[in-house]
Length: 355
Ligand code: UFG
Image 1: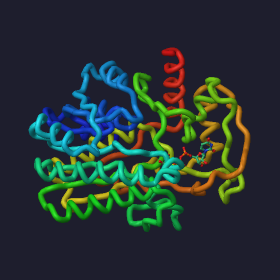
Image 2 (image 1 turned 30 degrees about the vertical axis):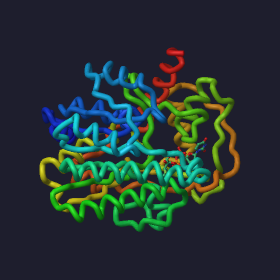
Image 3 (image 1 turned 90 degrees about the vertical axis):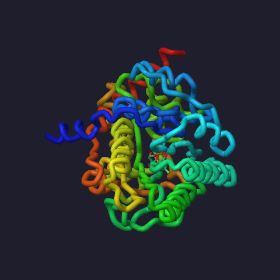
Image 4 (image 1 turned 60 degrees about the vertical axis):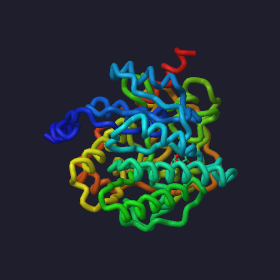
């Protein structure tokens, strides 16, 4: 029954053009696939800073469509203007493009502020000039810091950011909220992602980390395939049942579908508030040790890991209350963590075979 409802919400809407910034990136590429499946016409803008042009082939292998692609930097407002002029009527923008490494942002704060905020402001100005009615913004559960109560709802307080990266998400949300408040005809949604993992089940697209991965799941799969010696578990002395940190891991395809549903809500007029915020998570806390166990079960591979000290800036535990997105967007996760780990493993193996 619920599956049918999800299918109805994803029924094709033909001919709507959506600019997807960062569309060759990890979450962006999976969203482009879901947009095509739902009948939209995605147009990608990406400067390939943290992605590869071969992702377009992956998208084509899955969907049969090669989306239009502009190799432009959003910080260049003239180039952005060129895209909007060339594309004509654009129905919506999904804005993924941003720098996203927490540690790097501490070392290079100005790079993060300049890149993440300039690009957003350029986009908002272009939306205004060209009367593009709707925007989806990639935000993060990082805006909550360590919440006082769990699970986290959208009304939980936004805490002082622990990194410049986190601050660009908070500031980005505020800039969008204020801009939309001044433009009654336009709408926007900020989606606060928890921890996206996994790859497309076809293994044609997935995560392509630059250098040594910072995130848990690519580190796990690279260790299992022999690219890294062992995983370091950053602390088992937290106040959690097994002592390791707790996160809300969700599959990237589930996450991608939420963007299509958010668009549908804005374009079909159900978003009455103008600007809205949704948590996107499974609604379940999973510890680092449980995540490792889920990987071992899904892959049949025994993972080599050691327990080391805490990583600076880590939150002890966080997971989402996704009921607002369940109710208002008609969205919920459908893929389990074991299935997600299985797709991550399939993708890592495919990368190895491509070498
Ligand atoms: N972890 C390890 N070993 C590793 C990597 C991670 O034990 O080698 C642990 C971390 O300590 C943490 C968990 O695995 O407990 C998840 O870590 P990730 O780096 O995968 O994810 P984070 O929750 O730290 O960060 C993610 C996004 C950020 C975002 C943040 C919001 O990567 O962009 O969530 O909380 F800001």
